[in-house]
Image (cartoon, rainbow, N blue to C red; front, side, top):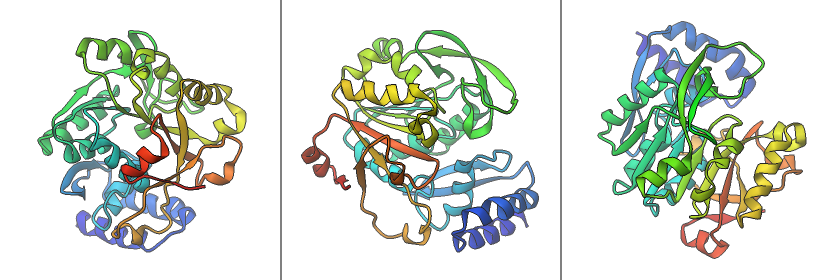
Amino acid sequence: MKYIGRKLISQILYHTHSEKYQNILMWPVARRVLGEQYIETVNIGDDIRMHLYSDMHDMAVKSLLFYSDRVHYAMEPITARLFIKLAKHASCIVAAGGHLGYYSLIAAKHNPLASIYTFEPVSKIYARLVENAKLNNSNIHAEHKALSDTEGEVIMNVDDGQSSVLSGKKKVPQEKVRATTMDAYFSRQKNWPNLILLDVEGYEATVLSGAKETLAHKPDLIMEINLHMIRGAYKGEIQLTQNLKNLGYSLYIIRDNYKHLSMLTTPMEVSVAPFRPGDSSLFTSTWANIFATMKTSAELEKFGIQITD
């Protein structure tokens, strides 16, 4: 019965493009119908399967649970397609803030020969990440560690898909976890990343402070940025983007669009726009993903990535 309820909710959400309606009414209804112990295996696209859990209330799980049977790559649709194009040509791929394995599983499916390293510090989520890797027989190196600027330990503030070393306004459970730096880890592997995805909830600058040697190998970066940070509330975020520019990176904004989910079954153009910190009109929501690369526009076009303004 809960599966039928989930399918019905998926149908309603799929045809409802009002984010306010979804957040205020449908998500609470879904939580009540499914309860806290519901687990479902979904196909997120290209026969990639994931276990999803109703006791996790972050937007990533909601999107994948309620949209995946109707569209491919329901979470961050443009970013996912950009990631696929880059992953196909990468030999060493990193996902920091690996969560349940969405991007790691996509990378493993589209480039089974690549070395894929996923860092997930939260114990419960790490265990579920490992389950999803086994479910797909994926060649993922899952590390129960946080990335930071020094090796040792950090305190994680555990909050579903928004867990962070940084403390937020609300009080959440905490967990002490091991930490390493990207430089220390990959110098031991003797295998340097050429594609890195960072989803570390505002901790990006600290992680990249521990990745100076890694960045010298010119990896492509995809990282999440908060609009409030760009507006100047957090000057460290502005410094982060400026530091990347000083290293020779060009920065682009990825405009993920959830307003027309019914169109995701058709081929989608992957395009990025030059990143201008002061131009909030580039954002479709509070959050956005930034693509940093040293590739030229001609090289990006060969990958099937267009630059628009």
